[in-house]
Length: 177
Image (cartoon, rainbow, N blue to C red):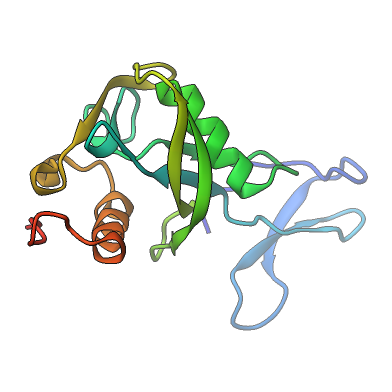
């Protein structure tokens, strides 16, 4: 377990300790005063893949991790927010496009990595593409001309390949590495 980012109990303000609660599970944060167990859940990111102007819309990241690399628009789900709503909000915040989620493409998780990434399919319903929050560029790439060597994350590549398989390449071939 990494050093805890939380030091004090939200119930009694006692100091957290780390220890195994149940064999086979990771160490947990446990309050030394009241015994409260603080379960740290994985963070969830919601994003969307959709087409605009004859191509798949991707954003170029203006922040780390993945600075300067391409991905689908997306971001963290807020506590109490529907995941689909988070995807719609994040797309609007990052590239100025209003979307309507049409389905779930996939949930992408990787050993030792936080967060989990929920990727939806969507259709654009309004707005004009422009780089906004955390984005340096926005482009629609033809299916046969995606920037495969410059993808920000493994989930970007995996989701795009799933999207192309599900939706069909429209070019007669999957142009992937």
